[in-house]
Image: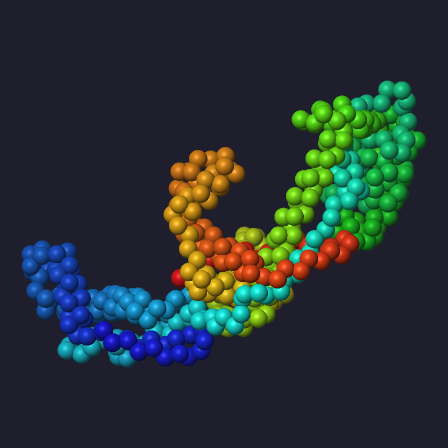
Length: 450
């Protein structure tokens, strides 16, 4: 087999492939032998139909199937021999436009295919990377403590009074009317309103203050123009409310007993210390992720790479998969337009993610980074522990989904990035106030490795 490769662009190759007649003839002979065993032709016994008769009836079908096999096998052998990594199906053109196999002549075809680009690494050692760090302050610990206190809240009926006060939980039935008719989204049965929390439309909760259990009240309020059911926005709504019950939140005292009830803590001070440590662990993890993302961005900046269009499109598919599925299910024109807009807005981000993946792949290859079966087994054990499964179950599931080798690939990519960071000059900088250094840094990717 003869193979010629032409570089059409950094991400596309044209393969000109010639398969000798001997190979073509062998494929044809095998095809007709198989057909002879199953063909049914009037006047001939099963399995005894002559080749020439079969050619009269089935020549076009047989040659079409043989050509497809020759193309598939020839293309696969060509990319293996030339060490290419196709990332899409090839566009095939036959030399013979009659789509026939000519006796004694080789079978020739061209295949244009998108391939992974060869990344020329300019630099990846000693790069300067900024790491954003943020210290946990006492206010955050107190906020977390208050959240725990809220979760431990007990709700009880109020028995000492029968009128609503600010801060109460009022259990009501309410009905909204537009032109004397109720509307969807304008009623609630046994609905609990925390008075003063601002969960209802402006003015609603204030109308409940002073109401007595069993009392009915009617009042008018204008619905906000930018919230609530479309039919009621900006319109004056008549509300009828029945007060059925008044409840209150009973918050536990923040003391040593509260801490002991939550777990293995001797005192409130122990609980605060644990909360502070957990918050620090969380911030450290965010800083680590941010650092890795910053390193990838720096590598993309320093090592220009041509990114294949098909890989960008697949990355966008991967990033917007959930929304894409919703669009397919609902066939909503507004959602389709939103998806199109999001693809445009996220295009540059997808290109950088693919570029980063290609660069790290090249680093892994150059540095001979490997992930052994034992390493993979260790990762599978970690996943099993995290998901409370046994290793066999995890391996079987990943194998069934075709993701086992993807896991090995991800591990190799992580190790290559670890190597970059070990040699990097990391500059720590305090994260700006209110800055979430874990925001919008998502470098998960579709797997397109060869």
